[in-house]
Amino acid sequence: MERYCARQGVGAEQASICCPRALASFVGPLFLILSTIMVSIIVGWFRRKRWAWWLAIGVLGNQIIADIINLVHRDLLRGSAGFVIASALLFLLIQREVREQFF
Image 1 (tube, rainbow, N blue to C red):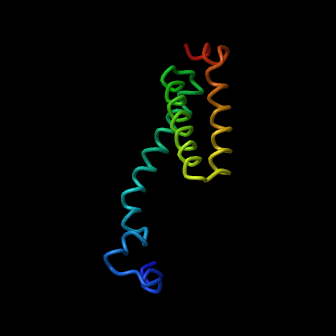
Image 2: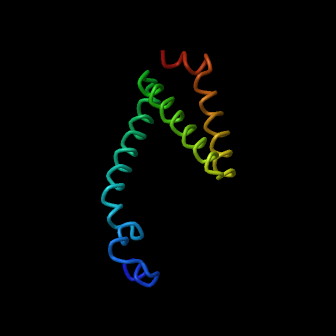
């Protein structure tokens, strides 16, 4: 990857921006934490735990916010598709029949 950056005319001071190695050591553990949270949501969901329902609501809420940001940055296809899907899932989660399963 460093060779690619050098071929593109990027100096050593900008290599951390171009090359993902420095970023991977930071982002990798964050994705590990996120995947652990998602697995715990799945386990809690099948056991119909109240906290799993709340975490699912939180994850979908964050996804809707991210999709709105995509729309603001004119990434219309990804933003609109994600917004529609996440909103539909959130709508299903807050229905009385689903909510009663967890409360």
